[in-house]
Amino acid sequence: MSGKPKLYYFDGRGRMETIRWLLAAAGVEFEEQFCETREDLLKLRQDGHLLFQQVPMVEIDGMKMVQTRAILNYIAGKYNLYGKNLKERALIDMYVEATSDLNEIIMHHPLQPPENKAKHLASIIEKATMRYFPVYEKALKDHGQDFLVGNQFSRADVQLLETILMAEECKPDILSKFPVLQVFKARISNIPTIKKFLQPGSQRKSPLDAALIPKVISIFNIGNE
Amino acid sequence: MTGIPKLCYFNGRGKMESIRWLLAAAGVEFQEEFLETREQFEKLLQDGALLFQQVPLVEIDGMKMVQTRAILSYLAAKYNLYGKDLKERALIDMYVEGTTDLMGLILMCPFLSSEEKEKQHTVIIQKATNRYFPVYEKVLKDHRQNFLVGNQFSWADVHLLEAILMVEEKNSSVLSEFPQLQAFKARISNIPTIKKFLEPGSQRKPVPDDKYVETVRRVLQMYF
Image (cartoon, rainbow over all chains, first blue to last red; front, side):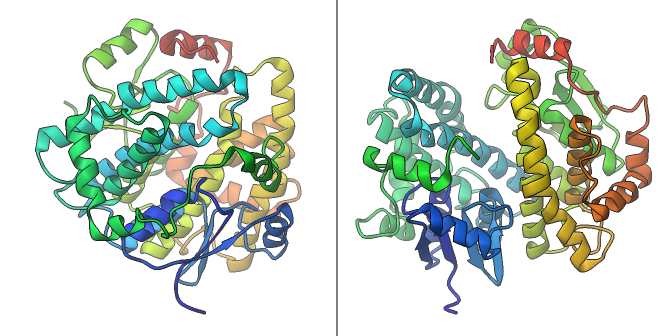
């Protein structure tokens, strides 16, 4: 056993990507085992490795952790990316729950039927620019600090950066009305661990290739379970 | 300002119900402001009370908290229902995320057509009995303790009881193969704060009806 966390998922972003971001931001090396076929997922289930028969699953500190939020909370707590006290934690939680909501919508975009795609994209852009980004723009502008919460780097900063980059993949100039977020993006991207993660060859995954959608649907039996 | 938490939501379960359960379990008194009209909701939006333009909203300790999980995590930690250390917390989080997924299937039911509802009921019972309940049954059987995590009452116990009762409303014999969960249900229901919450006249909300669905659609202007 190497002692490094080991991630079990398919070779793509999905629900594991935020976990990869957080580990990388914390400077934690991790291994990955990919489900290439449905049989791979079924084997993990049969071997009793998946508490609720689902991935993501992360082996860490002797635990086989499942449930994305539980995993993220544990990593954030362990690596001091969760604020200094209960109230900072509350603020961080509010911020990351919202970025997760936006990520969720973006994540489902490739799975939209062709006739829905344009409308779905419009709703992503609307939510990002009218509901979510204004909140973070204001928070940073109001306190004038480098980080979202408690003048200290936290998971909120990591998760916001991840979401910004995913939104930009939908619309490259999506930050055009958010000058403070543009500066934030540059600043957080320059943090050494994050900078490394953003370089080619890192464990960061690419957006889902349209050609791979049938495979993903078949591994997870999407729509049927 | 009275100092007690104030909940702002529809007069019904939805995403606020788990928050009511947790406050009640912790023995914390709370007030409620019910959303009846679109105008009330627009006023909240205009006043900037809703960080992401959504309810639930809970005013507590000088904060206007939104995002159900953020609120629940805060309450759990504040009232010592979140375990003794990081690993217990991890376990609680895993269990609660499981019951959240299960209850999430039930949450959308009132908004489905009758045909979709029937289909969804089947899914709920199937998932409850094949995916979720076996996990908690095994946990309790393996450690033989009264509570799910760390031999101590926690948010995980409250959330599981809430989920059990909600599934039983769909199918009253759903626990028939789960003797540990039957005992768990009786035991947790008997905790004084929970017992009180389960009595008529408490702030626990009933099964959603058509009036509730109408209210949500009218206030949010979301026709799903």
